[in-house]
Image (tube, rainbow, N blue to C red; front, side, top):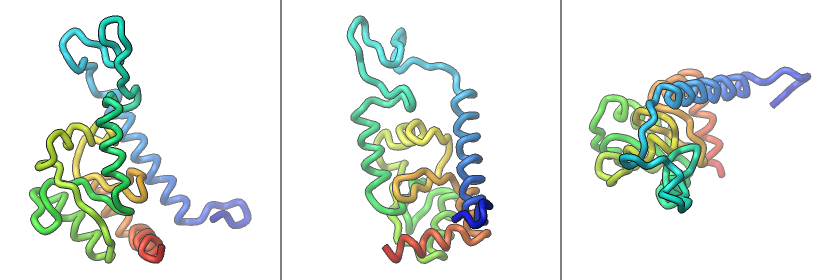
Length: 165
């Protein structure tokens, strides 16, 4: 909250996290070379007919809807390599351990076993790596941000609030 016009520590941390995520997403967008989805095809166009493609993600409406459904399928969703009880990378393992330490009730999505999920979620989040944490439909970041939020107590506060709802 805001007391006397000054943002609280939690509000400052949230704003800082969102700024880091936005900066990383912008870097990913600027650094990504233009690649049409098919040779000779410009995203959003198919000959003279409009072919709807999201301008923000480059995904078709169907794929974007599927990503949105996955992101919103639980209050906390971790897109990771492997499964909760059998992570297939160190960053995914660390993220699972941190969420477990907070007592979080969360869903995992194995991006290695879901056909097309890896590329679709990279485009959907505009975040190039996994794991990816979503809380109440909002992208929070990867392993580094999860760990940072845990170290400052922000993740525990967030999990407690969600567990009480």
